Structures are given as structure tokens and as C-alpha cells.
Length: 330
Image 1 (tube, rainbow, N blue to C red):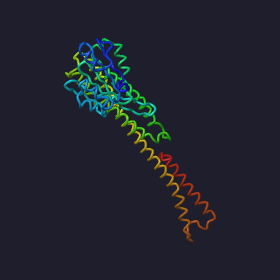
Image 2 (cartoon, rainbow, N blue to C red):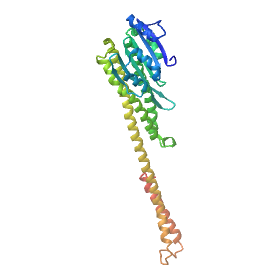
Image 3 (cartoon, rainbow, N blue to C red):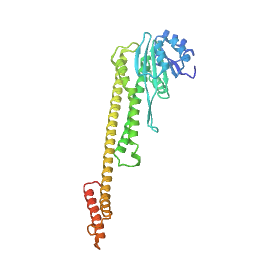
Image 4 (spheres, one colour):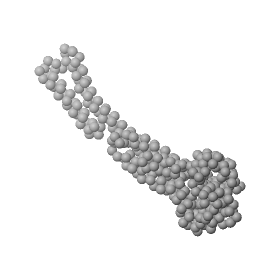
């Protein structure tokens, strides 16, 4: 259990206070005090490891199953004795150009908060330290923890969206750059980028409804005075969603522009091939006619017949070359 429980602490009147090592005793003390709560942070617990925690805190078995299974959509579930919120923090790897979504489950109830994290992203140590430096916020109990965690996840959405925007600008420059060896895989890069944006949208998009419920609805275990803070989080989340939707549209436009450029280049190549084939066809045709071994042919016995035919072929090729050059085929 020590490796699974990242941190366990009791907070009283907005400050971290001494508590028994056993979290069930700490929970009893917090409830007896009335102005305290226990916050347990866990990282990828197994069913056996989480069983004792869920039993002591009275967590609903369906929420426990979701917390252990992971791979959940962002959502908010209200149960008799607790509130269950699923968040999906995202991490952007600049070297690999990949967006990875983790999972963060938050249980809040009577004098307790239990956070369960899956994946390497969204470590809550920084959130906990920041809250411990703001006792006036932490004094609001489990609601303050839910707000701080949600705010940290959504703020990171904005940071990842900005990083994606910077990479998209580089990709757009590549799309409209002159054709070269580096542009051969541009379409594959655009498709790969769209998959990363889709991963982002799967994490941020469904979270808007739970945030709206926390901001505007009457949700148990969430204090009414905290709703303005959740409205601020919902507003930032809406901006992040608008940003990523704009990125998706720009990617579609970039892909369409790239495919149009490929089509134009292919047409140019076909025109060039056709022009050179036409210029090669003229001397081939003349040489074929004069190679048919007939006795009666124009200028066949004339001493200047052979040079004249060569001159005609050269003149025809030069005329075609000038014609195609004027029309932009060469």
C-alpha cells in the first residue's frame, strides 16, 4: 500500500495537520472535528489494494469498478455517499509529436477526497503543494480540492493546445513549401497530427458537460459558493475546446491544400511528359515513313534530300518546343 498511496494527509481549517497513520482513524478524527477532511492520493491501485480504501470510505462499487478499470470518458456521477468525477489530463511529447491522455478519478464525500491516477501524466503533487500554500482556499474542504484538480487539468489543456498550434504552423509552412524530398510524407504527417488532435478532443470535449453541472447545477458535496470557480474552469475549458476544434479545421484545410497541390504537380508532370512525347513522335514518324524502303519517295534521289529531312525534323521539334514553352507545359 505505501507505494500505491502517493500521499495521505488530514487538513483542518485549511492547513495540514497531524493525523493517525491509519487513514480510517484519520477519517474518524476529521469527521469528529467537523472542519477537517482527509485527502488520499493513489496511483494505479489494484483491486485488492483499493478494496480497503473503498470499504472504509463507503465508495459505490460501480464507481470503484470504473476507477480500477480506467479507460473511462470524462464524466460526473452522483451517488448516495460520494461524488465521482473522471478527468482525462493530456501530455504532449514534442519529440514524438504525440498526445497521450491519462486518467484521473476524484471521489469526494463527507470529510474525504480520494484521487486515483492512471498514467504518468497529471501528477497531483504540485496541486497539493499549491493548495497547502493557499489555506483560505483549502478551508473550503473537498470542494476546493476538486476545483484545484480540475483547474490544473484544464490549464494544461490550454498549454498543450498552444504547443499543437506551434507545430501546426510548422506543418502549414511545409505544406506550402516548394516540392522536395521532405514533402513526400506531408500527407502522412497531417493524418498523424489529426489523430493527436482527435485524442485531445476525446479528453477535453466530454468534460464540458460535467464542468457545466458543477458550475450551474445543484450538485451534492459541492458548496454553492464554489460555483463561480467552476464557472471559470468551464470557461477555460470551452476556450480549449474551441481552440482544438479550430486546429482540426485548419488541419483539414491543410490536407485539402496539400492534395490539391499534389494534383497540380501531377498534372504538370503529365503535361511535361506529353510535350516531350509529342516532340519525340515527330522525328519518329518521319524516320518511320522514310524507312519503308519504297523506290518512289520525295527527294529520295536528291543529294540534299537527307539533310533536308533532318532539317525538317529539327524545325518541327523546335517549333513544338517553343509552342509548349509558351503554354507553360515545359
